Image (cartoon, rainbow, N blue to C red; front, side, top):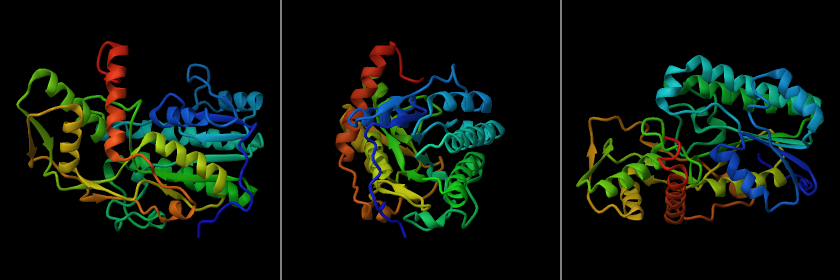
Length: 325
């Protein structure tokens, strides 16, 4: 059973390190921590390569962060995951092992490790419960990344068991929002559709094609809600149990595509290429543990998408081209 910490963990006045602060997830946690009385520390990858044990240990020894949000990872879409298999397993295990061990030997008070939905078996029952991890085979295309994430969850659990370390793990659902990756081939569905409908609106395209039948259902969480949940759990949760972070609600891809088109202002036709694969019919997290710990998402999907599209437009103007393309 998940349990509340007997005494809420105090962030006030602590030295807090966000690993991966430039990514979508890490930057959202940085934005959320601005509302807390903490001394935030980050470090650029050009200064400290998290795959390099000596650099990580040296930096931790000098800075001695008391609280760590572990959002750093080598990430990519299905093509990158499937072709760079050795890089994905090596880099992610190295990053995780270095940061967790450095946190331990430098006496960090608390660490949060962020997982990925690919840790769950490909055919696990829906909605996905935390205890379904390691109950069946993984999706083959991103297995190396999933194995690395499972290793991180198990490391946090092992350090808690052997050393009494207050290390916890959380599992966010599909995220979207400011800082997303809009690459034409490597982006996830939310960013891909925002970009596709935006470009279709600008070009006056009469039709936009969405892959698959449109019937699969997916859950989406605005990234700033995810960051708020992470801060809430850092304060309230202490245990070896993994905690899912999501909305507990899902939407059919066809309905979702129509919602994105409306927000972007695309008024043409939407068709579905049924020759393309649908993937898993449904991917929804069981968020009952999170609910018991006193947190629920507050940003509606429509409001979140409006903010995400505004952020996409702002990033396009700043960069003078498509963001992260």
